[in-house]
Image 1 (cartoon, one colour):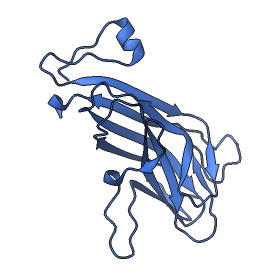
Image 2 (cartoon, helix red, strand yellow; image 1 turned 90 degrees about the vertical axis):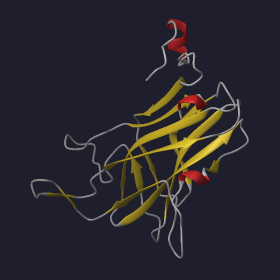
Image 3 (tube, helix red, strand yellow; image 1 turned 90 degrees about the horizontal axis):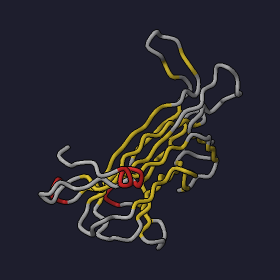
Length: 195
């Protein structure tokens, strides 16, 4: 990275000074979700607490959005994760540049997770409804200096109303063998000279 970090006040606010040549990392905002979210809504539905807001310094800036999500669903179900965007409080809409092309009967999403009956570990043992970590990133050009909020939504395209959890195992009994995890979403503003 060719930019320089600003003073203590700049660091605490998330701002990083740009390099004098006009391109560089301008600011970073991040959200860590460490609680559990579960839903049986087929969606699309926002995953509560998995959103990040950033106000671009320049209307020409690009925003790199990166997310890492621990996800788990009930047996043999299919879940899509989508990146949504809100500009200036105008309402959320799916970010069309951050979904896969859908043709015929296929379905476009930002990321995908499927829960199956068993998950095989490296040593050959099996575990039921084992959580997985899903990650994605997308470079956006919102063309604004208004506040931009990026949020992760989830939907299900299996029949019925299967359960889907974030940050825990689907069949967790809150026992010593069950885990709790974190999911994150980060937005980074770059001046156009660097990208």
